Image (cartoon, rainbow, N blue to C red; front, side, top):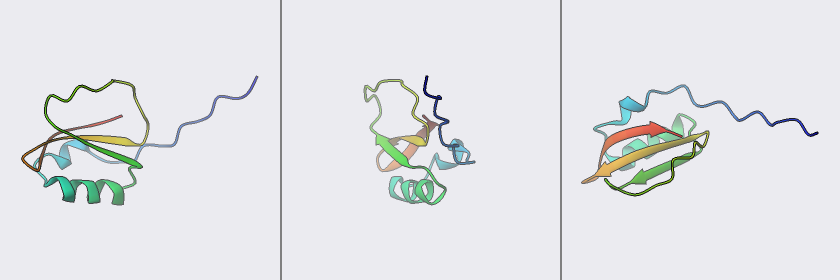
Length: 71
């Protein structure tokens, strides 16, 4: 049986710190802090809820981050 791979560590970051930022600035900041996937979504977008390590999600309304979560 093959060993179970160890997922990469999440960046040491605080998702709440992105709320209120301009979406482009938030994406640049997230990538600089080590997030491999940055996803911007409109409010109410239907998404699956699977957890993906290294991903940060932004809910963006009028070019401003209104909510942020990892996975």
